[in-house]
Amino acid sequence: MTAADQQQKPSVERRPGGAGDRLRGYGRDLARSVWAPTTRSVRHWALASVVVNVGITVTGAAVRLTGSGLGCPTWPRCTPGSFVPAPHDDHSPLNMAIEFGNRLLAFLVLAVAVGCVVAVVRMAPRRRSLVRLAAVQPAGVLVQALWGGLVVRSLLNPVTVSVHFLLSTGMIMAAFALYARSGEGDAPPRRLVHRDIRTLGFVLVAAVFVLLVAGVVVTGTGPHSGDVAASRFDFDIETIARLHADIVWVVLGLTFALLFALHVTDSPGRARRGALVLLAVELAQGVIGYVQYWLAVPALLVGLHVFGSTLVWIAGLRVVFLMRSRGPLGAVAPARDERDEARAYS
Image 1 (cartoon, rainbow, N blue to C red):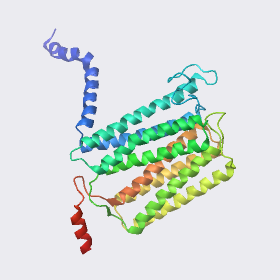
Image 2 (cartoon, rainbow, N blue to C red):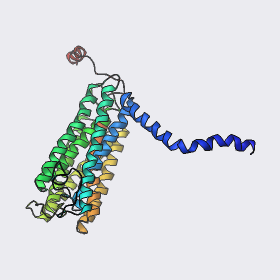
Image 3 (cartoon, rainbow, N blue to C red):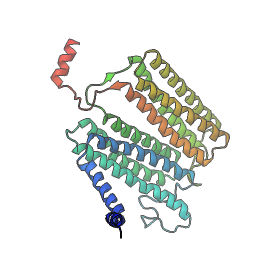
Image 4 (cartoon, one colour):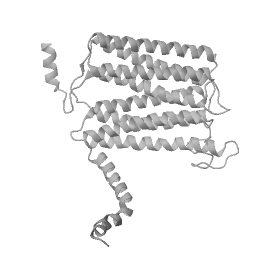
């Protein structure tokens, strides 16, 4: 054996335990990010919350699109007498596995939600604004779980299914707000654009929410109910689809107006870029929407459309946050008496 071989031998012998060591290291880093958080790790937890909430929204749509909405026909059990899938004459093993898998994802969302809460509570100095936003996460998971039980017990009534999706958009909004606020200070909000432009941004976000509501009505009227036993809205599908498309054009018009206003007023570049990203996502979502309509709403494109709707929602919220500032990290809100004095001289 040469001297070079002897020098390389120790590193070769350590390789079998390398993967285990890395996993243990990842586990320690994960625990440290919760128990001894930094500003960066809190922001990562908030981003993870956004991702998992989008994920469970899309997988929830996949449950419906695969006809697995009642794959687990009872709640909180999957089948009568069992919390896990058990042979059932009325439901195939695949449908049961899909629905049960989506239920299991709720535990991942809950774990991330708890991680967010612990991280912001352990953060030094503690920021009450982040604690309040983080507390929404586990509370929202509980509400969603209970509402999911109502969805099952109502045999996928389109009203309960629609509210289930809209609750998910609320969870995404709270998670994104936590992500945005964790990257800035706690100084009073300062507008970076003209007041009317910021108002236009709020109107745009409201229009996007109306678009989401119209989308769930279309979904509750058309095919892909989730199960043959599910009821449907008693609307004309073409009329509802056209109304949905009209709202799309309103949202696009408001986005163009916002872009134009940001450009002519020489607003901050980050706000203009945010509006451009929103427009790009809207256009892509519009293309998917029209193609799925022309192709008689195939399940795959419907799933992509649901994913796109979450991206439009996030991009719209992001624009609003980009049009104001709360100062850099570390900036704090003035004391009450200082605020009163500032108002007296303003």
